[in-house]
Length: 544
Image 1 (tube, rainbow, N blue to C red):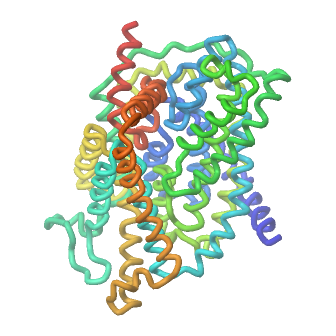
Image 2 (tube, rainbow, N blue to C red):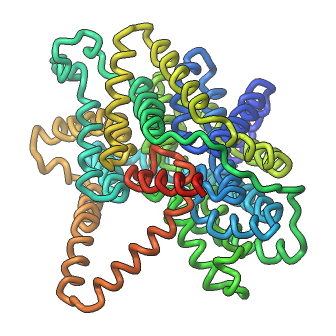
Image 3 (cartoon, rainbow, N blue to C red):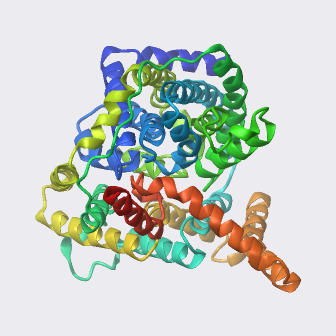
């Protein structure tokens, strides 16, 4: 009952004219950045961080959440119409959705994607309302050793899952942790990694780091592989689903939601895995398996529901534990830190109005997105006709302006350029960006909990596993690290059939990655080496 009262208070705050306006602006902008290739929600939120200094915290968070949800919606539009996913999570949608569009059923594909996203987002947000307070009550009872173990688990799982190899993932994480150390030691006051440069004494501003990695790094990467020819659009018509389409879609919507929410709440769960699992499940359960690969509506409904349910799941650890599980959540967490708000379990206790207004706005934003996306799908597709040089010139301008406005220091512009070059290098050499960002944000928080653990144990290392939960988490970390080694060792011993299965898996992965190649999607969360293949395929498509 208390939760329901708090949610009603959140609706009262979210439905004020100002917050309603920011929610509307967020979903419009989010849908646009989801449609445009190379621009994801993480980059959009990072670019807007400097503009939110003077805004109410709740209004800014509501707008960011609208951008996040809108990006999920927008990516499906270009996946279906142009076979160019705006987000990595909508790759699976492109497999069946574009086939439906080519068969003259673009309207039905867009409708089932939009309605499925609405259903999954609403159910996922309701689960967030139910689950988050329970997680908070459990988390408040934890001590510093358990918190440190949880943060290590989050960093380890994100790093091990993303990228073309674990070595590259941990290399990116190491860079992020090193950047997080820059500045003054919080205990001794000694300068670390400042190299005598005075502006670094206070540490690297997370706004500068986020804008540089996402915006500058991506713009430089796209400039190196620039394509100016607009994509060909497919006439859409008025989105409408027949009785048979509804009958074949509602069960995939529910099953996709069941896949998406728990994966979104897990560290490194993301939306890619549940969308793939949803697609495979629908193919097995469908009464029309022969249609898969030729435009099956279940192959659009299920993955899109899983995609949007995972977005609600992602906010659960961010709000309840202060742990982001993707790049957009990481930037939103950086915004809270920038505003002087301590993320974590006490956020629900210290800032209840803020948290519940944000959760209520998710219901509102979901409804707005449904009303906007059904009639405006053809308009979003036309955004792809914007020439890339104009698009990225604007991004560079606003990124530079935003970074300078943080502290009004010329030094920040040099840092923006240097860290932007680092972002370009990450993409060039196949290092994932998310571990670096999480290292910068979570690294100092993990250091604080590590020092508290040592203080409580009088410097004894055993203090790190002095709580039962911490012991269990370290065992889980060891299993996650050793399991791939054990599996590969067993496969080598078996010998026969391994090469054939590996070749089959590689071929499947290549075929799954192919639709991404025209639009780079959320570049911060995709593998750069895949992008190099993307641009090659885009060039071949343009030539043909």
